[in-house]
Each structure stands twice: as structure tokens, then as C-alpha cells.
Image (cartoon, rainbow, N blue to C red; front, side, top):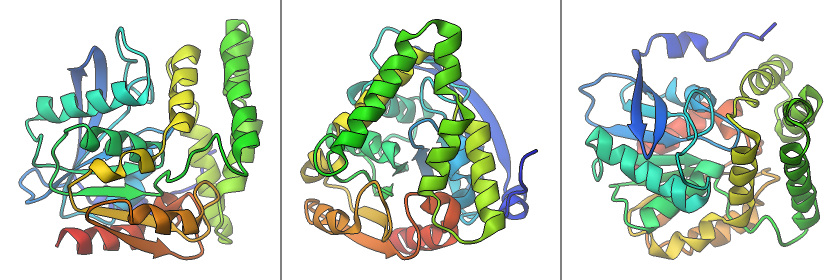
Length: 294
């Protein structure tokens, strides 16, 4: 039984429209929130193994914006990319094509969370125009090097095994509730028991929404082979980094170094939270976004 969302009432007051469109061979599912006539449009890019649900708590605190939240190809209700690897270059090309298909390329603010921060940064650095870029819990350091390198290599081995095993067993391993719960418990920092229950429930419901084992392995390799620092110097758009002081994925010291790599960027630090800003402190994130775009 899923735990009740603390943000459900606020989200329910925001208009919602589901859409589907073909982008680079992927039948892409997209949810549009907020007033169609809003002055600002944001396009969101969610994290690894997530879908559009993940950023809904932030959306719930931004009712005045028009927000388009797609499922990345191969995740949620979106089909995998056709004839392309699920790597950063392909995801960046998909994002650019999505904005073009929607007729908002160069007009929409682009926001990426976690893995989505790499995709969004790669797209903008390679020529996707946006008036502003927002990165929440940006991946700001190489995952395969440094003190976390060994853990990352173990995770690569896990995803490789999941892809190599017989289909039924491979899916069972990759969708293991025990693995999902370990990840969720590790990343959640809140001491609010009700909020923790809801976070675990969200991961249980949506963390296993991937299309195939091979595309999941490709996407995971992409997520640990690149980081935002590769693209920062080539991003001319004003950029907001929203980072967590207690993030275990990219330490706050690295985020302070990362912001200096951009030509025009500012950093907002949120205390007492880790890699789940979007779940634990969405109001603070929304306030930072609103102030940045004012």
C-alpha cells in the first residue's frame, strides 16, 4: 500500500494534461502542468530510473508556471530510442528534438535533476538554446574516479549482470525491491517518518519503470561516464545550481568548485538534505527557481 503524498493537495490544484509525441523514434510520454497561458515555460529532465512523477513535488510549488515533464526514452511510459544508443549524446539530441517538436526551442527554461542535469547540460553545451538553465542535485564530479569509484564499478557490474542473465531472472534482479529499498534508505536524509515512508513508496512504485535491460545498462553507463563539469564552460545561458549540503553523490565542496566553471552561474545550497531535494525540500528548490527566474 502506497503512503500518502504530503504534496498531493497542492499538486491536485494544478491543471494537468497528458500528451504523447514521436521524438527521435521514441514515442515520448509527456505531462503538461499549469496554465497554458503562463508567461514562463519549463521543461524538466528527471533522474536515472525515474519518470515524470519524481519532480512533481517541485511542480506542486510552482503553480504559476507552465511545466512540461517528459519521461526520458526507455523510462516510465516513453519508448526507447530507435536505432540509437542510450548515451548522453543521444539523450541530449532527444531533448533538443523534443523542444523543437513542441515549438519552444530557445524559449523554454530547461531544468535537469541528477542524471537529468548531465543530459540538460550536454544539450545546452552542444547548442540547444535556453534563456536559463536550472540544475538540481547536479552530478558535478566523475563517478568512476575518487573515493566512490569502487562503489560505482560494483554498480556497473550489477547492471551488466542484470543484462546478461536470462530474461526473467535479469528483470527480477534489476527490479529487486531489496535493492530499491537499500538505495532509498541510503539517500533519504529526513527524520520525518511519514515523509520517509512516502519516499520509499515512490521508489517502490517508479524505480523499476524501464523498458529493457540493455537500454538500462546503456543509460547507467552514460550516467557514470559523464558529469556536468565536462560541459560547464560551454554553457553561456545563466545557470542556477541547487545543491544539497549533505549530498552523498556529489559533495557540496565539489558543487562549490563546479559553479566556478560556468561563465554565468550561481549556487544555492540547501542544508539538511541529500540527493533527494525534489522529495525532501521541494519548496526550498521552488523558491530558488522562482527567484532565479524573476
